Image (cartoon, rainbow, N blue to C red; front, side, top):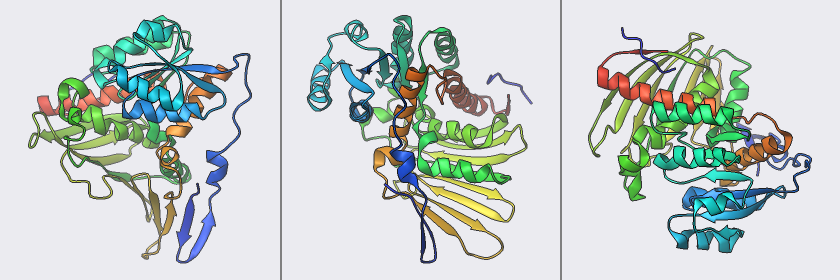
Length: 358
C-alpha cells in the first residue's frame, strides 16, 4: 500500500398529498443590510456561457452592479454588455481598475493566473471550478488566496442547489452507511473545447469534480481511495470507477463516464441508511424511501427556476454577503484545493495501480 499525498417552489409528494416546503423563503429571502460600500462593482473575466449566467444573476442583485467585462473575444464581451451593462475592457488590467470583485469565468487552465492577478490587485475573487489544474498550482493559489485581503470563494454551485441542501438536511438527522454515486456526460463534443484536455485539464476537472466536492460536503473528509480508469472515445482517460472510504467509516462507489448518452439522470446520488434509501436525480428531485415496504416520498424542484435550482443564485448571494459582512465564504480556497487533490489522487491511483491514503 502506498501513501500518496493528497493533502419557485419545492413540492413534496406522497401518494396524492402535496406539501409546500417553503422554498420561496429560501430563494427570495431579503438581502443582507448594506455596509459602507454602496454597491459591489463586479468585473467578469470570460463572457462565455457561465460568465453570462453569473452576469445575469449579479445584475439582478440590488447590492451589486456589473461594472467591467473582459474577454479575449471582444464581441462576446460587447454582447454581454448590451444585456447587463458594464464597461467592455481591452485588458485585464483595465478591468481590475474598474471593479471591486472579479469573477473568474475563463477556461479552466487560466483560473490560477487570473485569480492571482485579482488577489495581487486586492480584489475579492469568485473563481469558477476547477480551482486550479494540478496540485502545485492549486497550493500556490490557495496560499495566495488565504493571504489576500479580500474574500475568495470557489464556484461549486451544487452545494447550494435545493436538492442537495435537502439531502444534507436529511443526512444530518440520520446516519448514512454507504452510497452509490454517478456523474456522467453524454459526450465531449459540444462545445468542442470540453474534449480538449489542453483547455479543461482532463475530464475529471471539467465534469466529475462537481461531485468530488459534493461527497466531501455531504459525507465528510476522505481517508482512502482506490480507482480504475480506461480510455475509449477520446484522447484521454474517459471512464472511471472509484471506491472512497471516509474518516468516519462511511464508504461509497463512484462511477463517471464521458460518453454515457444524456440519459436522465446523468447525475445521481443513492445513499443507504438504516432501512432507508435517499436518491437524488440531477437537480430535479429527491426520493426518500423508509422502512421495509415500497413506499417513498418525492420532493420535486422542477418548478424552481434553473439558475436557482442549480444553486447559482444562492452562491452569488453568499459571495456578496461575505464581501459586505466581512465573513468567511461558504466555499473557501481550502475547499478548492481539496477538490483538486481528489482529482489528482484519482489520476495517480490509476497511473500507479495503487490505493491512495490521505
